[in-house]
Image (cartoon, rainbow, N blue to C red; front, top):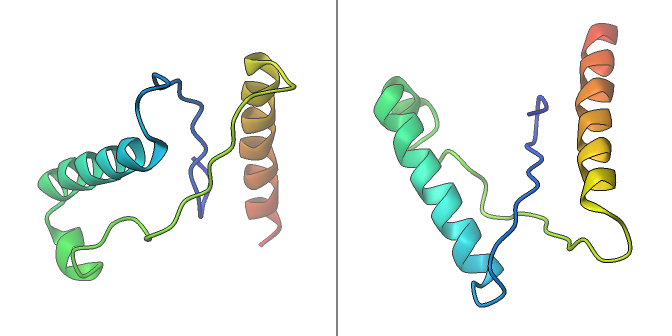
Length: 84
């Protein structure tokens, strides 16, 4: 997790649509977060996630390269937050 976004590396079956998966993931996670922290419902007007998302597939690179990229993003985010 970074300060303003989340990186995930997931594998979904080819028959599952990305939009259905993202809808389920965002919906269920928001429900769980609001159950655990009900004060956030009022603060964020019952909307935990923004409406959009960015998805890409792993084609020409390995899964390990994607995971390394995500890890580097986390480290860069931590370094950037130290400057502020």
